[in-house]
Image 1 (cartoon, rainbow, N blue to C red):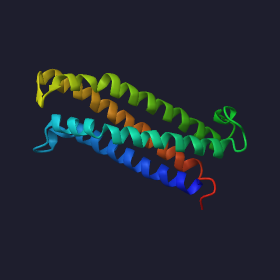
Image 2 (image 1 turned 180 degrees about the vertical axis):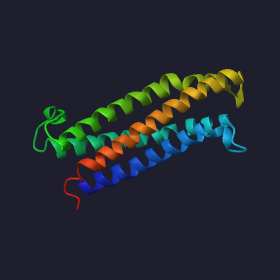
Image 3 (image 1 turned 90 degrees about the vertical axis):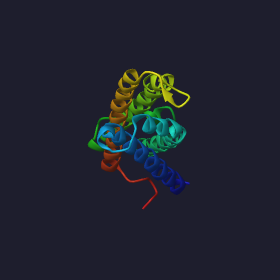
Length: 168
């Protein structure tokens, strides 16, 4: 069972992190890439939103499992979710859990508030107000870049803390 959870964590983290990095970079450098229109990048991102959401939805619970087993092995829920700062390893694990929470909140904000103006300005395959659309995409680009930094921080802290319990 642990091997399955580990595989799900790796696969979902790769899908999520890869898509996040690709779309963040495409939006940041969109003006420098020939023949890449901003609206095409945003449309593809919105179309792949389900894959990004599902991969994050698998990644976070498997990371929580690592936290519970790695930090609070043998402790029953909800006490197993407690954050500890008594050792370096515990501090890294606790920081990782806080960053995962911030990442989740940031994704909710991205989907509900930041991305919504792009949907409203992109009707039937045409942009109704180019200036407003570019301003909205700037917000999406900043938030995706922020999420990429948060996700990278989770990966670094995860690498610094522990291996999967029971996986050699």
